[in-house]
Amino acid sequence: MDDELATQSQITAEIRAAHADYAAGREAGAPAETRTRTDFPPYRSSVLRHPTKDPRHVDPEIIELWSPAFGHSDVAPIEADLTAQHTGEPLGERIVVTGKLLDGEGRPVRRQLIELWQANAGGRYIHKRDRHPAPLDPNFTGTGRLITDDDGTYRFTTIKPGAYPWKNHDNAWRPAHIHFSVFGDSFTQRLITQMYFPGDPLFPLDPIYNSMVDDAARERLVAAYDHDLTSPEWSLGYRWDIVLTGSKATWFERSGEE
Image (cartoon, rainbow, N blue to C red; front, top):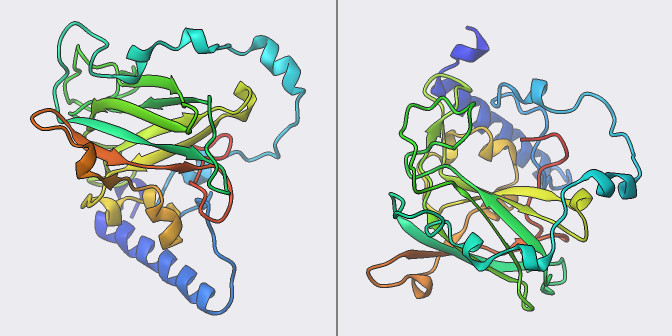
């Protein structure tokens, strides 16, 4: 059968086999894999989408001359509230997502730019290549940014994104997720990752989520529901720390990955 027509049962079986092979290797003494696998057969297009040539080193100072720039004064507080960027209320379940940006020693990374982007409540992005027939929401753009405070804390108010189809195989759906990017001292240090929501029934079916074969590393991408962050009659709260380095580091995409 053509790869594009693979059934969910086939994809699920391949995911389980890859995870079982990894678990067997760990028992035999193989090192832990804390990153996504570049060539992950259940993720059909991974072979075509990752870089095929070695990275090329360039002068970061030259890149900075041509890259966009930001300053603290350029990031307005309203940019952290994705529900307040238009004249009307967006559709969907209002949520607060907060946490800390930490280094591998648990120290806060303060005054760093964090960006997020996501689909709307119907599972559609405002992007010309998004062909999902779900409706666009005129009151929701799906992008936000902020600067972490002195404790490394970030806090976004947004709408819980919907799951969406992505044509990796027959009846393929991505779990609800939010994309995050973290900047260091410059744009050349940008790191990108994804945050998921607890208890999503699509987790075992999604080859992107499961391309991380290590259970603990994969679970670090899932936020925790926090009722103390939940506001009566207003929003639900989720907490998710982003760890940049060390054994508990959040997974980040390598350059060229999506």
